[in-house]
Length: 224
Image 1 (cartoon, rainbow, N blue to C red):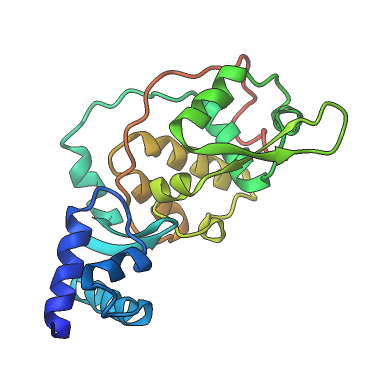
Image 2: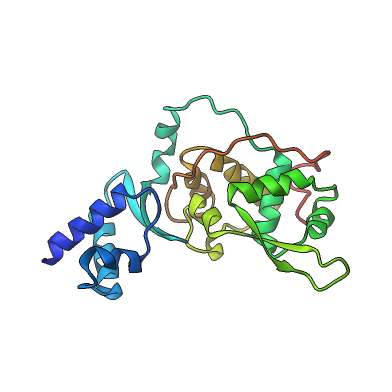
């Protein structure tokens, strides 16, 4: 198989896959006749091949995938013009705190937000696959330590937490919360990319359910 055919095989596999594919998985397509370095080179070429398309090939936490570009978001949103909020501001703030301060306990989150965190809120974020318990703090009661998952990064179209946008000013905090809210749409990563310059516009699955946790502080005040 020549390199042109190999690239076509990679392209087909990535387009048809519903999940990101890692380089090691892609090597299986060629019965390991191509190593990881060769596959990585071809993936780079594929990125260039699609450089002027509305779709791009990006590397996220769980591998490589094709996704829509950020500038396509406004057009794609027209396919689903009415999308009522599904996550409360409290939920998105909690998710942001975990993403930026991880690992954190429920008590840490409550100290930052200044309000009690509803257990259902954390459970539904876990069920959604965006957060998980990675251990327990060595203190009285051994509280659970929460962190974000690789699936969370995939839904944002990011390869690592280092690509999260800054969250230092009230305006930046509000922008990040709004971007996390866009994870409920089919073009979730576009919002974050527009705020941070992060690569790609992802296709995060739609979330369901309304989460609440009592009183919410004013925008921009929760992350001190």
